[in-house]
Length: 321
Image (tube, rainbow, N blue to C red; front, top):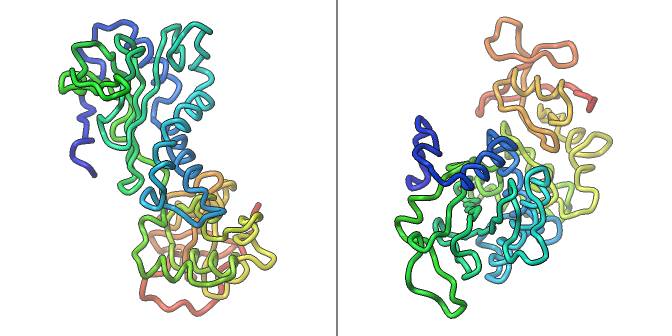
């Protein structure tokens, strides 16, 4: 975890705040997303939009062109408005800023580096909602700050934009910092695993290899789409010819986050439950009810196999229901 992103949450982020408008905007977002789940999913969706993995096979910030990286800020502004339509209003015709929140004019800024937000002249004196994301470390930050003159560096670029000075950076009130992104499992794989996953020419075989090699973790739809690079990519996960059928003989069970039964089974096997739209792959072996971590699947007891454990029988046929 990046040390500069660590905040001591024993203290109220608004402790000592006297800017009533900032407090109102902060509380509006905080009430709408108290645990940061919505903003985290928004950050993930925006990254995935840029990667466009289903068509390109890309899954990392480093694979993007420079012009694509600069487009994240525009997508972030658009997606934030869509996600928080219960909080954000469109500005009036004469307003030069991006939004109105709690009746207050607010501008939206994103930076590829922490504290690197570029502030235009029309935003000076106004509130900013600021964002940052790092897919490699799985973190994001989202906060509110007043772009007061005393919070900004004196030097201007050719567009007359400025950045926050030290006082301005310290004045940011963080709604989420550090926030935790939904996982990008391909970034967590080593080079050998990535090479093995993407080696087959067949999309089905690539998905099989993904679920064979990446186990016990939540795998999102976009990861499956990036590996399959096909229109009906989730079909490659399901039964009736998909990975769920093909990998069963290897003792691998595939649990879907859209099904309460599967989420419960994943937790009983000792894993974090997949969320809706996600799947989790695991090798399992038959167990007894006395084992400490055990799940009942299709009438029998099963547990997660150890890494070096030999699996000798097929996984249970867990229906997607």
